[in-house]
Length: 88
Image (cartoon, rainbow, N blue to C red; front, top):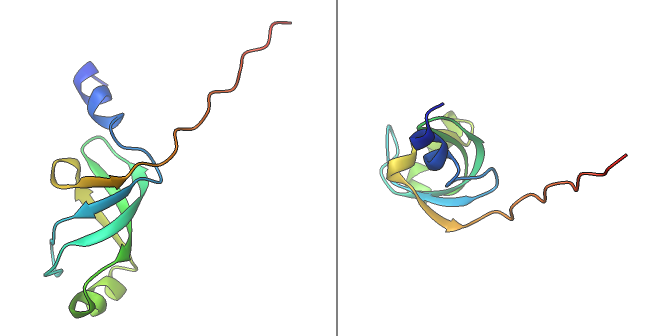
């Protein structure tokens, strides 16, 4: 992975809450929680959506893949603590 993509990927973490624009069969923006971080996209569990989009969300099993460039982090997930290295 190149340095540029490492920096971009580090901007998002599993557990972040995002606001994503409509795409595919969705007509309204939605809120979701990051489940997996890819190189340029995020797998998101859709947690809040417009009632008009509920049928489409159900068809998608409450999941969507969104481009990193299109989303806004609403609430960052707590950073995982790095375990302390012990000397033996």
